[in-house]
Image (tube, rainbow, N blue to C red; front, side):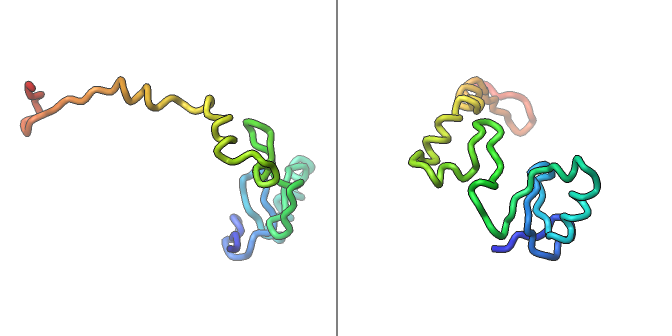
Length: 110
C-alpha cells in the first residue's frame, strides 16, 4: 500500500516527518526541510527503505514503535504496562444515573 504525500496529494510519500506528523514526497520535502536550519534538524525517516533504527520513539516509554516486533514482549504486555496511564472509565460509568421520562418531558415515577 502506497502512502500519499500530505502536501501535493499526488505522489507517493518517501519520508515521514515526526515533527509535522506528515508523509512527504521527496520533491515536497526539500523546500519544507531546507527552508531554515531549524526545519533541517527535524527527524525524518524513510518510508521506502524501512530500518528499525530510524523509527521514532514513543513519547511515553521511549521505545521504538517497532520494538515489540524485535523483542519477546507481546503487544498485550506492552499495553498492560501503560494501562495505568489510561483513565478509569468503569468507575466513571458507575456514577452515571438514568432518568426515565414520559412523552411530555416530565420525569415519571417508577
